[in-house]
Length: 292
Image (cartoon, rainbow, N blue to C red; front, top):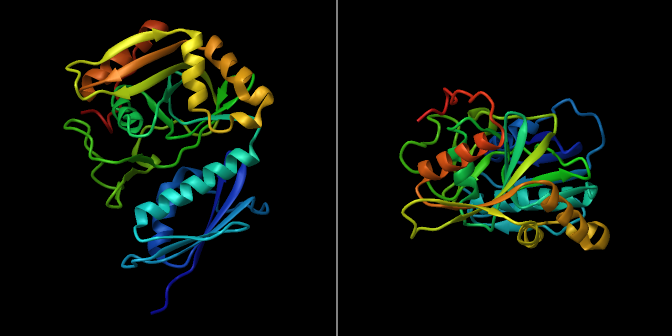
């Protein structure tokens, strides 16, 4: 069977990333995952190059990266994870001027909120919920901060969740990709703010607690915030003083809070109401595309 070879070009944090897929199945997955970053007419030499082998019925999917060892996975979801990790690690090397946090980034009235936390503690689900409450999507899993301006850059790949969101926050009727172990919502199915960097307005440390009947919110001091931020800084060692000064600078210049999430609606409403207290402006209408 003859399969179509397709090459896709993307601009990610102003770096040219080229992905060649040996089959339409993978080309469609990669294109949907990075649709907002697509740059088909980019004529610059590629900063990063990848090739993916495999098709819809494959039991073996292979990722090749120029200058690196190839990796193989049985599941498409795992290979997409490998691609995303390879891209983000390489971008940290190519853009060492930025301080990268393991965080989701959302915008609210032109200001960015970073949702910071360990994997499995509900960052992406909370981000998805907040899109139903007047927030716009900027990034998932990666928060690139420019120092010292505190501008947060967009890295708008598809939002990834490990399980279906609760009632009232259903996935869009079309466009979402179910790869078995993970669910991916392309940017064009969400209210998003892609392009010009926006100023960091607050950091929220997110932790899901199944034992809570209601979410809990508290302010976090600079010392605690610095320690927690440093633990989620991805390229701290690329910065002077091993990144400590940069992280402390962020923690002291930006208000920081902790949100222990419970019910998704209650958690999102609590965060939304707190945000409106920080900046008492006109409350935006909820997105018609995502209103529950």
